[in-house]
Length: 474
Image 1: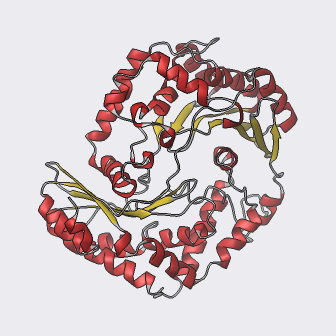
Image 2: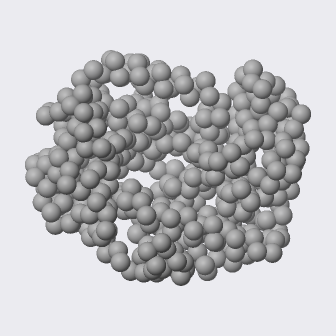
Image 3: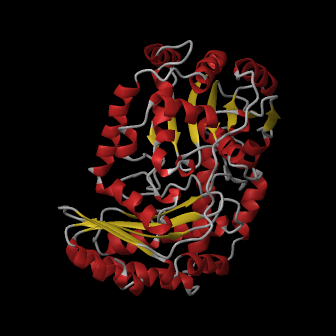
């Protein structure tokens, strides 16, 4: 159970690979004729998978599924179109808190029964909250589908909200854990620098002040206004028949049609680039350079994904090679991106000691300027396309990844691009498209800066070399 993190997960010791779950939400494979162990090709694998089927129930809930022959598992996800950006400041963190409380018991299952049930199935039940969605998900053997869905639906639609106070302490500990980890905390600070007072600038995990005081009644009210009707999507991938899934879910959903009472505040105007610094006695400066990104339906998302791979999304990327491999100035350096309904965020993270801080940011600025000028190296774009396509092909083998692709697209009202069309769009990206994305998104005057470290004067001086206006920010 964890809130969304814009920070990517750490991969191998050789590289930190940026997670682009939101950037590439609708890319799940490629059709290059690459041999697979069964003797077929990637194109054969794609052709063997049925197109997703979608059904809307009487109450507005939607069901989407993809049948995958030859597997004995089903990945299930119950998605809710509500996240931290939908919360007023007085309720900051309630979406994440409710996600925790789903596991504490429902009308027909106690907390320990839920844990024992999924343990006995060999499945893992988990959940996550993001800025725009909440999801409860699992993967179980196909013969346990009905039991798993019955428990999950009861958890989502009929939580008892028991043990609120004990789980309150768990969430407060989670907030404290993030506060103690500058590599996590700096990303929350960066979001605030980019989006200011808008809810997109607040941590998904919430505010300790709100969590310590919010009442069970307020939590029930928020749940009742969000976990209803068209806000709900059931997504499934694996050995599952769509009609049977619809029948099962139709019996378990609430009988009364309802409309969501949660209202999403739009981002009417972007604030000017922000500057945030938190003084801590750390060995490193943890730095994020961030800027507004693109919305999830922007056609530039393919170019932006490739730009991410070229700049800092792989072991061969420019920043990883220049800062870590050639100069040894950082252990962790990467780029990342997130996309929302009407905007997004891009960013660059580096953790480095004080003596290396200025040079790290100088190298970063030089590489940004070089790509924006259109100076891509021989084979650089082709290698990025191969990287993206290869990862998408590998995701075909995961029912969980397929379920996530379906659920995220439907719950966010985003076009579910076909596999072949996705690959066509990736391959159609030109060097000028990538350069234009770098110019548009990482222009110096658009950059916000967030940092955690021992001395603000050193940090301010270093980031001012990228965007001089930041030196004037309070």
